[in-house]
Amino acid sequence: AGRRSRARTEHGRTTGARRPRGTLTKLHLAATVQAAAPHQRARGRSGPGLVLRRDDLRQANREGREGNLVLFVVDASGSMAARQRMSAVKGAVLSLLLDAYQRRDKVGLVTFRGAAADVALPPTSSVDAAASRLESLPTGGRTPLAAGLLRAHDVLRVERLRDPARRALLVVVTDGRATGGPEPVALAGRAARLFAADGVASVVVDCESGPVRLGLAGQLAGDLGGTAVTLDELRADSIAGLVKDVQGRSRRAA
Image 1: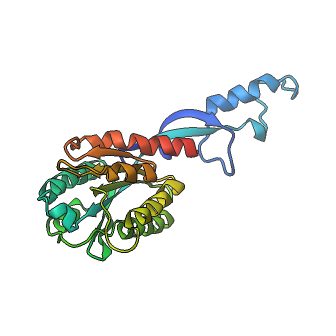
Image 2 (image 1 turned 180 degrees about the vertical axis):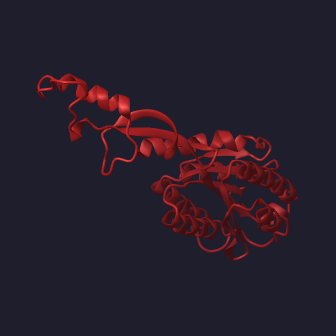
Image 3 (image 1 turned 45 degrees about the vertical axis):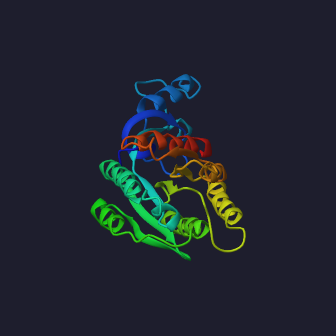
């Protein structure tokens, strides 16, 4: 059980009733009685008690809280480190990691720099492990944004097989400037649209600064089907608002 997103669970408060699909696991007594009551005369009831049929049975809907998987995809390339923004990025991600830990989320970390992307931290419940990996994060080199997104997509695919009920939130920390290979920005856009097709909720933390701004992080957020916030706007408690997107997507999918 987690503390972040509302979800149908086996434990929690009763929120309603429905016809059971498959095995009845938790009887909603009042709804069952209400379904059976109008048919008592037709069923020949002559004494105390109700005459019940299988169609009268109602399953109780319960709503609890579940944890999410918050996967961070962090740009560790020279385009970030050269502007000495990496310390600010680390501080923002660490604050989000702490929030994730308090809400019993699993957290994972993918970094990309040079020519490849690495899973710096497989999804875990240990915020200490995530913090230590982030603190010693190497920086520099080109910006293989598409590689980072594709590696994150693989991580989420595996985790979805392991725990289908756990919802994912993708947090991409980048300025959106992809380099290396032919058409790197277009390639990153195609990789981002894989998440949109899967219905993964996402947010891009835009780290672009300076007088000339290309707006590539906002474009990336559009390809992901998510939202973009600036690094300066990010606060420790802001992830709670971001996860509303997770809840909204899950309800629409249901």
